[in-house]
Amino acid sequence: MSITITKEFKDALELLKHGREHLFITGKAGTGKSTLLKLYQETIPENSVILAPTGIAALNVGGQTIHRFFKFRPGTTPENVTKTFLQGSTRRIIRNLDAIIIDEVSMLRADLLDCVDKILRKYGWERNKPFGGIRMIFFGDLFQLPPVVPRNERNIFQKGSLYETEFFFDAHVMKEVPFLRIELTKVFRQKDEDFIDFLNRIRENSITSEDLEWFNRQNMARFEEGKGTGIKDYFVILTSTNRQADEINLRHLDKLGQLNPIYQNSAEIVGKISREMYSAPEELIFCRGCQVMMLINDRNNRFVNGTLGIIQGYDRVKGQVEIKLRNGQVISVGKHKWEVNSYGLHEGKIVSVPEGSFTQFPFRLCWAITIHKSQGNTFENLGLMLGRAFAPGQTYVALSRCTTLEGIKLFTEIQMSDIMTDPRIVQYFNKENIDFEI
Image 1 (tube, one colour):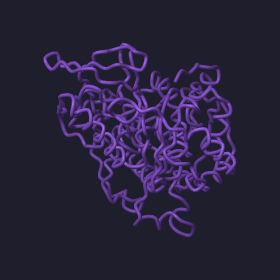
Image 2 (cartoon, helix red, strand yellow; image 1 turned 30 degrees about the horizontal axis):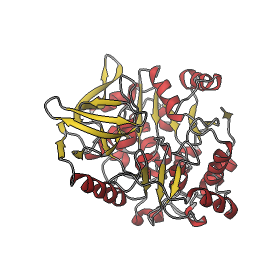
Image 3 (cartoon, one colour; image 1 turned 90 degrees about the vertical axis):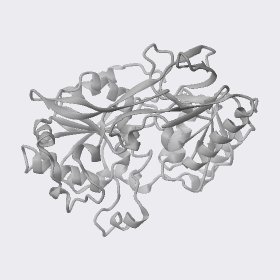
């Protein structure tokens, strides 16, 4: 996805760099939120940290999970969080913080944000102020993937209970502090205005049955079958569950394995790293002909995170895998070391401190991938496999991964019941004013 750094982007960067307001940076899929965050990271104030609700999201921005940074254990709640004992090093980091950036804020639960507020008040300089007086900057789109709420905790998030909803905007601290909301409006991923308009109507829950009939007619055509795999090359299926994706990937691997040697490579893990921070499969199994997705941005600009390729061969002696990209280029890829970092304090400045590493070939099998793991990626051709385990926002996330309407193929027709935009999010956006549209 190519993004032009416009004057509006520069204006947003000025607010990020020089403002003191709490900010919520939002926008539709493909409007450049991740790009804006990366640009901000290049000039980010020294005494800032970047956090995220999940391990994958934290890895993508080179930060930590909220739980890991604040040492929150399972069962931590706003009622007991102040009993959390932070070591001197973490307390000193909090005392020196100027700003906390949280990415993928759509997955941040209201009660977790209240935990963050209370621990910052306890250990921060300004204990009577929300978030201990520390500036908060949120990035994300509430219309995409929601927070995870186990069945036995759902009674916490309903009218008349502790929280109206599970979303961050219903945290109690949010009633005490104003946030400046900036909405990015220019879509870079798609160019077709009809497709962009269709995606917007899905996002905002204003889709009609006529819209879906039109879309289903356009996209239910059978896709061309490729040799040995049952699907054409550089075509990825988005599923709602890990089980579906794993079954598809293993089925196609087994077919290719009947004709080609199968290789297995174990990751090299140094230090204590939680599984949610694993950047690639711990045990990677592949063979010639496998379709894979790259998991890093190449230093030589040959590919980016999310690029699809087909394995052409493996040189065990050199430790190099040959991969053919969609543009026809054949590249050699070696193992990649991911550093897993925490935050530390050095001479009064917050610094990133390596605490372990994970080394593996930077790709995974990718005839299929879950919608959740596809968030942030861009594909030219995809198939959508709807399932029962759909969450609000998943249909929008899945369809908005594709660059064109023609690149989408449906295994089953999309029904009105598959468009699960949470009405509470729509209500929040309708009652809250946008401070800036960019």
